[in-house]
Length: 114
Image (cartoon, rainbow, N blue to C red):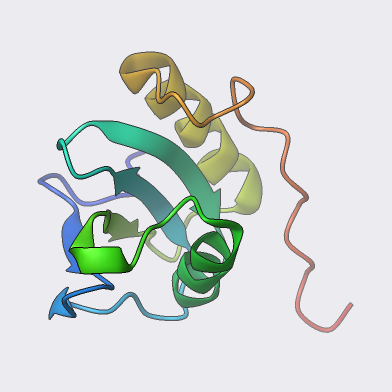
């Protein structure tokens, strides 16, 4: 089961505001540094919130548009568990230098109504 549509991720540069802002939906994301190298790969249940969290932590630089936030929105069949498995695969493939682990350890998303 593919939880993401094929093709390249959507790009957004917070510093220059070029591209499409991420929505408050679940998905995978990557942060590219100014040299174009993938510096971080992650999974979240809220792409917009996570982008701003990375801005505050310094992983995503807004100065002069040095970093790009790239994302794919997960389809409705995905779960927190399937997205974490996908995250592990992407970290193994790209070996981003800011990821401290192999991924997949994140908290499970809370179920609605729980």
